[in-house]
Amino acid sequence: MKILLIAINAKYIHSNLAVYSLKAYAGEYKEHICLAEYTINNRTEYILQEIYKQKADVLCFSCYIWNFRYVQELIIELHKLLPEVPIWVGGPEVSYESEKLLYKYPMITGVMIGEGEKTFLELCKYYLGKAGILENLSNLSIEQIPGLMIRNETGELIRTIKREPLCMDELPFCYKDIENFRNRIIYYETSRGCPFSCSYCLSSIDKGLRFRSFSLVKKELQFFLNHQVAQVKFVDRTFNCNHKHAMEIWQYLKEHDNGITNFHFEISADLLTEEELKLMETMRPGLIQLEIGVQSTYEPTLQEIHRSMNLSRLESVVHCVQQAGNIHQHLDLIAGLPLEDFSTFADSFCQVYQWKPEQLQLGFLKVLKGSYLYEHQEEYGLLYQEYPPYEVMATNWISYQEMLQIKLVEEMLEVYYNSGQFEMTMKILELTTKHPFYLFLELGKFYEDQGFLAMNHSRIRRCEILLDFVKKKDKEHLELYKETLTFDLYYRENMKTRPYWAPDLAEFKEITRRYCKNGRMSHVEPFWYNMKAIEKEKTLVAYPEKERERQFWKFSYEEKNPLTKQAKVEKLEKERR
Image 1: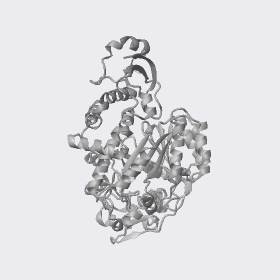
Image 2 (image 1 turned 120 degrees about the vertical axis):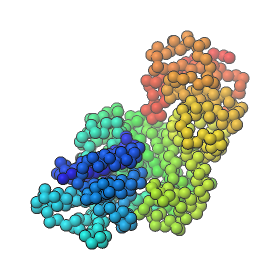
Image 3 (image 1 turned 90 degrees about the vertical axis):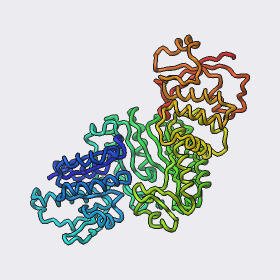
Image 4 (image 1 turned 60 degrees about the vertical axis):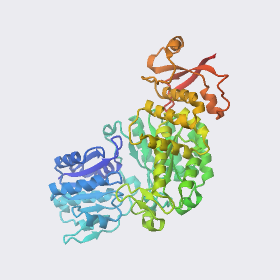
């Protein structure tokens, strides 16, 4: 008997915590359980072939919005090839409206609804008993297993009784075979549920909030530290909703830091206490990073989506963490929420952008089955994609045309801000506008007009396009932008190909030879403008063409900033023009 758990991840570096947790919980039958992980970059035909080759007796798919279109295609074809093999699905994408799913796909045997560990264990017992491997369970009825939507022998759909939530301490640690996760992100949970009731989120449906005992958590964290994994991403919905729980974990990570592993937490920043902030200030740069869901700063929208948040406190915390300079902050906004129109969303963007997080994620509302917004979609005029990821296209307050403009902003934000590859240039370009949202929109429209969208561009080419944009936007300071772009290029890496606009380094051989004795690990570049002074004073007026002085800056690539990945930069000397 072979039961196959199948995961289709968004990227190779991702891992699927769900299937590993299911297998670990059913560990007493591990010799009958196999895992198969693929990615959405694999051809569906390839995945089909590989699953077929497994010769499994039962197939179980883990379903999410990023993979469900693949799963739907696969189950149709697999049923043709293996008509006698039961096909089960589970996960957030199928736990709601299970009846509709089973009517649409009669080849699906059943749905595991909600939390799946104990349900999967009992399904294993059912099939092993049916196969005669577990003799004492040969008469077990599938209808006795809680947490299922199934068909009986007459084809009638039956929902079994609701599965009660598990105690978090009952979940076994599922990463013992750590070698399987080399060069991949490890997802880890210490709690389930969420204390908030945000109307766009499925976590609000699970009202119970459960935590894993710290005695277990610290052993598991130490396991990750001992094996020097690159990154552990906590999937707890609001990690810091319990002060004691958060402090114990953060204190442990600080005291047992291995100097390598990074830990990612999704938090509610306005809930952070002064005690937590003081502890964070003492951590190694890069030990932890924070993801903060702002979503909107428009108060009527926050009230409408049932999101409780103290914005002034949130801003204060973001600045406090920023001043410490040791923690990467990732802030999120969602376009398409109720009551927020194009103008108010632009204002939300502007407000959060001015906080200058390391990353600002501009996302679009997903209308998820089971969520409050899904149930009230007509009331809000939500037009969204028919297929996953169910992204909103228009609402009562924002048109599809306006959504397309926000898409342009999103793409330019990813390239020129979130990439961290144009830091100095963007700081200068921002001085030309009062509203950064419209700066990114103007840049996006320039890309669109020139036919540059939906194309892969090299970093040098991105610089060239930005220079062409500047010629229209701020031609007066074109020479300054050439220097800031050169600065940004070497800030990130010792360029193999020198940009055409940069000065010939032949006349600076002596100073290069003097300061760059370790080859590719350092670089010296001459500039007429004082980059750091401009960055500090935030003005272009103070740097007229006359009175400029040449300055030499050394970029050291052995001493990169752990948060931004930028080289250490120091000014060497200057000479009067």
